[in-house]
Length: 595
Image 1 (cartoon, rainbow, N blue to C red):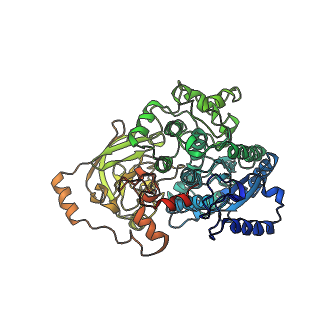
Image 2 (tube, rainbow, N blue to C red):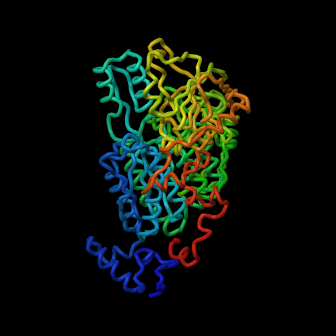
Image 3 (tube, one colour):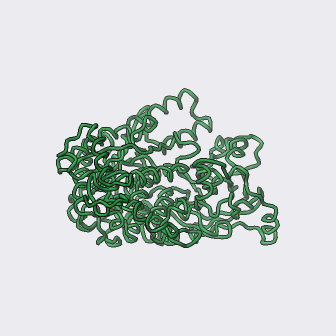
């Protein structure tokens, strides 16, 4: 055998790669084959290219209910192409079943996927994403492991219906819950609604984070064309999975790696698509994290520039009226790419082995539809997402202007400050709360560390007294995130966050705040001397730390929103030191852990 005694197995394929270290590579391979044969594999099967499949099924994750069917279809495609499929379980995250937040766990899932892809023998891997944080976690893992990889997703669920009204999670969840809070829907009615919002498996069927990240991943080149919008229960979803499995075998033979696909120009394509589809603000954080893993620069000013050049074309909730199944019937991502083709980098390579332009040229001819608008008749001009800077957000903040109230995009108001999520919960519905519709609601200590996990709490509820009076939107500002399914004039991701001593921590009730989305400005109208006095008195919150386990790692390593909330040591280059992440790892260890 030519495997070296360190078990690094450079250039080895199939079962011979990444051997466990016993000091005897031959014995390691012998032992590996002995145990894998207990799974019932023949020698002939074990000589085939091995294609790993990340099994992200979980009983807690309705978005991934169909993963077993996808694994079966992917496996069929792998076998038809001459490979050996080997599914393996990894972390699965659902938004509603992740305490304290799914964002807190995204990096854990990325680490889990990366290390299992590194540790186990596979010539290529099929990544099954779906729910919001799963796709970015898997893309981050793929970028770092750099084993030939291809992504597929579970797909959006179908719409539901209540009393003849078409409903979908979770834009309608928020709209109807707001009506319940305002007293317009009683307990029995809101209970009935809860059974109609998510009528089957799959991800939210509006332009939330799951849909946005699926479309961005397809534009990035990491998914076979057409895969982002296929509904979870449609037969095409299984056919796409089968084709994905077959293509994974070819990826292994070609050794086409994620770093060759997820280039800086490909990321710009994804960011432009994000703007054109009116996508979730969460995608800005996730694409920043992927860029950091690859060593590509990521700047909110670039997001802003692309937004200024790119109209919102997709008429989907929360910015429009349709749902993902309608986008599927309209042709999926292809008609969007056609409208953007003059501004895209069409020479970017995709996992098909062909360029984005070649794939777009071979897409089905367009047909009449009313979901994807032309660039001459957009849903919104000037991009879906706007970056904001100013003395309240020195490192930036973002606003989903496509889902905001036009009359509030330029606004000055009195701050009403909530110091934490608990403070907000305790006081937001107090009938004696001193608040008016023209005020600006401010939430502090809900960022990456303050939340912790940057909860989707940025869409602060309208105080009950105002909601009952008919107020539907107010300017709201925080260091938190919001669901891509939400809507309103909501400033998010203010950085540095309050828990890190950012200017947001210094805001007091009664201060004046100025928002000018057209000029990209967010300013606290308090003089420098007063801010300096408040800064001298500021103390970090005690909850933003931990003594053990993953939480300790999280608090010590998590970065701010503009760096994707990734862990510093997982980036290609450390944000804090400026050094490559593996700069101090001995060369021998680097060889053993590399692929």
